[in-house]
Length: 219
Image (cartoon, rainbow, N blue to C red):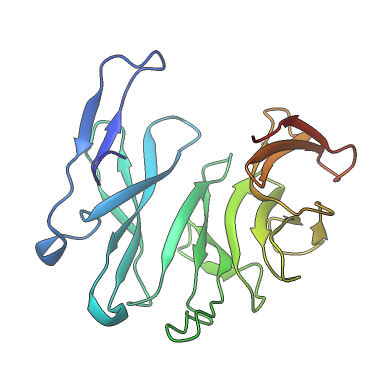
């Protein structure tokens, strides 16, 4: 994203093209307010993203959307319940599901700053949406394993941000990080390792949480 617009470019940085221009929040069409890229579809043909209109007094609107890589075929994927947060979409490797962050089952309380974010999955074939974490905490940043069997995410359910793994249906939950916690998990291409951030440093662990190695230490 660039200034709320969505742009694509070649891997060497050449041929930058804006494929969808953002519109002023007050008059924005569906999915055309300030936009934040989520991920590419596995076939490289579409991009999922979320779009947000931030209003006064917490009167906000969020949409999870998808668009073709050339800017055509704009589609609203998640827009209800209205007034709830729908964000951080991630495409499954088989292209059938989108995982995303949502607060419909316990929205933020503005005065106290208390939030309940869950990880949901959307079945693009049936339209079914499922809460796969269902825990009164901040569950965020979902990422699919390359085989589509597992989802890693970050959560503060212990009072500190840690990285967790569960199967795609929400079962077999395990905490992967120990002392120091972690956030922003990402899978290696072969699915054997997970990288995450910890206090600005980058740490890599095996997919079962063993053998943590700090590969870049923040200064």
